Length: 370
Ligand code: ADP
Ligand code: DAR
Image (cartoon, rainbow, N blue to C red; front, side, top):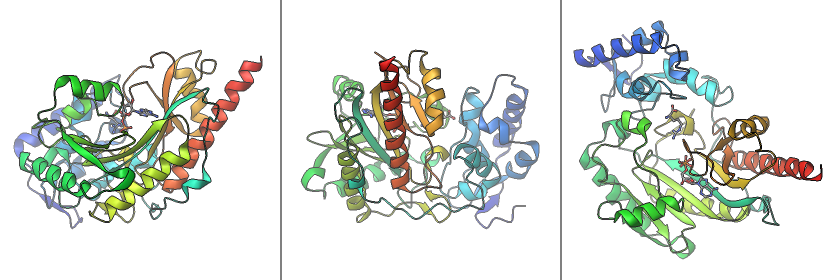
């Protein structure tokens, strides 16, 4: 019996059978390299399989089902509610440490520190390499579970709460909410193709039970210029986004800071003293910041994605394709961003991207001279 005050027992026998079969499938796979496989040892599995979270009754199945159904997952786990990070800590903590550059279970994420956006500038003033800049963070609204345990009513309540709160924004942040329900496929696809709206059908999220009742409760808020946007009900309850053409990190970050601070005056977010802001996926915990550029570095990228990632590793940067995660680069344009989001401040996360991209551009220019 767990000593965790947020844990209760009494898991349904059908869930236990799924877990036993899933554990065998995971352990017998010779190709799976997920962090789930690496850290779900028999001891951890036996410690956790009979536990549920106290408030929403989330089980280990809710945590690992995506990684069981998708053996090619990189991580393979999601948190079905805020309590899961505590109840299933034996699995989450080593995964967090492995992904976030050694953030140990005894480490404490720093207080939210946005810092001064004016310390940044334009990472590519000549506009030769950087096509656009995007900085986003995720927020989970207190009192709601995360995707796997959200009912249709939860999605409707979340959408009503967030969209009505965003109506209070003014100035550059003022905008309109567009629900996916009723949005024409043409409008939706144009927003996705223009990198404003989240894609649909991610098999990892589907297997995590993150797409139920779709498109109920899902949508996008954005200002007229589409430089300040908020996603509702995709992977996280909210993704708050600032983006624009070019490499002016200062302007993009300043707008995000203003937007996050304005929204934080109006809503309460799930936050943990040790882990920082809580999100559906453990890769987004802490600052939840992903600061990215769409960038063309033809000489550094001559060897393709993997070659560019090898260079980017030096600066703890992650390389994604032109349409973001799980996509390929089109026309030599890559999405490069900070990889780690925990154990550092929001300002540090953006600073890592700013410094890393500055170095990559310098390296590209050195190659141009040869
Ligand atoms: P997230 O950033 O929310 O983790 P994705 O990697 O799927 O999710 O990216 C979401 C969308 O944001 C995709 O359409 C992606 O092309 C777009 N995107 C990411 N970085 C940039 C950028 N610097 N400029 C323009 N669009 C971007
Ligand atoms: N499919 C998950 C994705 C992990 C990180 N990306 C997120 N959260 N969008 C995996 O384990 O590969």
